[in-house]
Image (cartoon, rainbow, N blue to C red; front, side, top):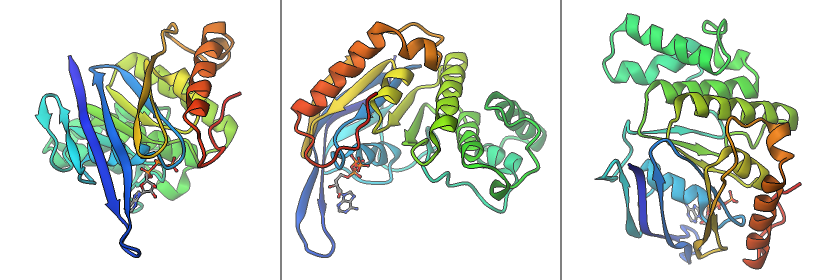
Length: 265
Ligand SMILES: Nc1ncnc2c1ncn2[C@@H]1O[C@H](COP(=O)(O)OP(=O)(O)OP(=O)(O)O)[C@@H](O)[C@H]1O
């Protein structure tokens, strides 16, 4: 079943200082099926985060529709859970309190909240840290907590905005591997924004490649690599490199004039 349906999405921003209009998203259409991992890639400034913010209900589109589970999105809601790049955890709450927060909002009784939160902390490798506070965790651990907090709520769609961008390369590999493991176990529906071609190919079932601004879908690339995936084995597959090279070519044909930050090994 289709979990997320984006049709004819467009967004024009008006710069609050100059009054200039910027067409961030030209026309973007794609779907994400239930239990599918879909990433979005494109040149810097092509509107990837804007697409995610519209799906989350934080930003209103100029045209087009977003449907989650067949229902039109018109604001934030518990059917969408966001893992932010900067964690966005509650600093005054413990790890357990953060993981259980959404469950509390849903009115789930305390004992059950604790049980669900602990189960998800264990799933992301944070068992034993439940009484710590966010400032006592490393960046990678905070991001694990962000994932546990969202998964515990069982949203229809999990939205991830470059969650590993500010994390050192070695920890990042581990987090990517652990995210695939969690995905393969639980099969949440994931929409993932990234700049990193290898990351997108490694994690995803499909990759939506956008053109530069005003963005359109250049191609939706299917990543038919076997699961379970592990970084060393999967990235060594000739098919992995073929797909990553194909996406690199698509992005360079698209004239990535805004920056060389797209990475491909
Ligand atoms: N609130 C805003 N007001 C005006 N312009 C905006 C606003 N938010 C984003 N933009 C502009 O819209 C375009 C798309 O921005 P967005 O952050 O969605 O792109 P992105 O592809 O995620 O960028 P990056 O790859 O650099 O993270 C950019 O030109 C940006 O400057």
